[in-house]
Amino acid sequence: MNKNILIKTTEQDNVGIVANELGMQKGTLVNFGFTLLEFIPNGHKVALHDINKGQEIIRYGQVIAYADKDLKQGTWVNETNILLPNPPELEYISMPEINNIEVEPLEGYTFQGYRNSDGSVGTKNVLGISTSVQCVAGTTEYVVKKIKQDLLPLYKNVDDVVALNHSYGCGVAIDAPAAIIPIRTIQNIATNPNFGGEIMVIGLGCEKLRPERLVNEDKNSGDSITYMQDESFHGFNAMVDGIIKIAKIHLEKLNKRQRETCPASNLVVGMQCGGSDAFSGLTANPAAGFAADLIVRAGGSVMFSEVTEVRDAIHLLVPRTENATVAKALLQEMKWYDDYLLQGNADRSANTTPGNKKGGLSTIVEKSLGSVAKSGTSTIVDVLKPGEKIRKKGLTFAATPASDFACGTLQLAAGMNVHLFMTGRGTPYGLAMVPVIKVGSNSKLSNRWFDLIDFDAGKIASGEKTIKEMGWDLFHMILDVASGKKQVACDKLGLHNDLVLFNPGPLT
Image (cartoon, rainbow, N blue to C red; front, side, top):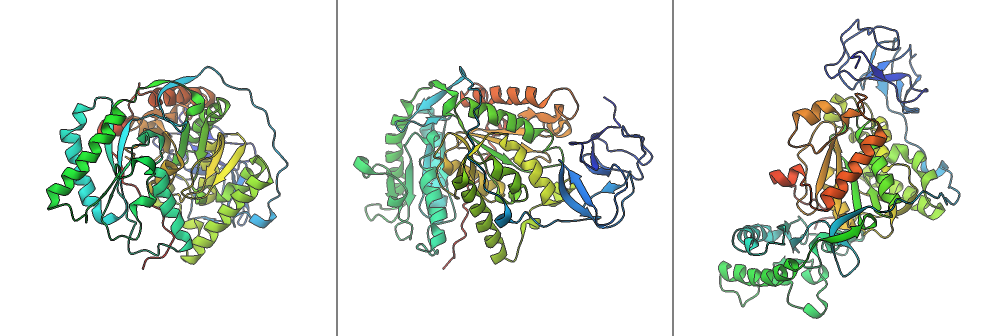
């Protein structure tokens, strides 16, 4: 491959992206027939022709910024010499006509999963131990460690025991309108298909969030909840023994689960970005988007999220909604988050991190346009508020903050059974509850982090493979991971993040 290549995404673009892993030196003759006026790092933008002060900077065929001064052809274009444009005005975005776009069904693809009585399918077989309040987190960790050491080896069909600790439950305005977000998040996490309905809850006893709100006790009352303040316990070891006794009941049930052949329509795949760079929108996200379209064609469910990373591309998403009702719901989530940020004296520009900028992403607009590529091209059939559970097959927008940990927690609550995580800068992010497939946007990262990245989408930038080829490869990997045939890197290494609840409500 010619190392002096600039990548231009559309004919309308007036900036190109440096594809050379080492960057390009001043004086380099590039494929557009001009020489660089300064050193440009890998992934960063170069002015393809003279751009006057105040003129548009265009990438992906969209305005990502305005020039803050005259920029000569061959100049490095970055956050120091551009201005952020205003976001699309929500009230002026036209409602779509009814979208009845028919796609060719994709039939015959299956995976080996764990069927549940509610019709959902798990990709792991996990005992989840939730909490009603942060006070008992230490006890939960202690119990999980003991179960893994003493009990788990006796139940060969159970993959893991996981503590679902969180920072909610007391010292909060439990009846405030915004409290519904963390509460329903914890409730819906308990119904994730990978737990097989066998969730446990450890409570303290004096908390505002009662454990009974978090688990469906129905006819098995008493088989899921333990209160540490229960006066029948004499000492900590008695508490632990009581919890272990209940854990055995659930482990026995989980151990009877067996993988069986399930159609790909039972996949619920969460799409997320973290540590993005300029290649994310060229390689990893488009490959994920192609795979997302395949999952939708197979009758499965895909969700994408991160409000501040779609806000500046909302005008491209509204026309893809199924009807005006879905479009209005999508715009409502954008407006809700605009107001939420305003209350904190912040705006969407705070999203683009130092690492994003070092990787070539100069503005949140540029980041957003690359981020939405992971949604593919399918019709958006539904919109979830934070913490809600997925309702429909097809492509759903699940409103979440862009924070990796809060987003992953909310997608877990929505019911995902496979997590697809795209990164350009690199992150050890992982969840113990669902398999997380890490997709590297550039081969430099994927090769350096060979034991942390599961899939190298950088082959698209080098010309080794097309987006279509990589999308099919990723689709097959999703099926293998969902079947337990392939173990993802973060599970091999045991790298798993804590849950982080999105709590916009007041503390008391």
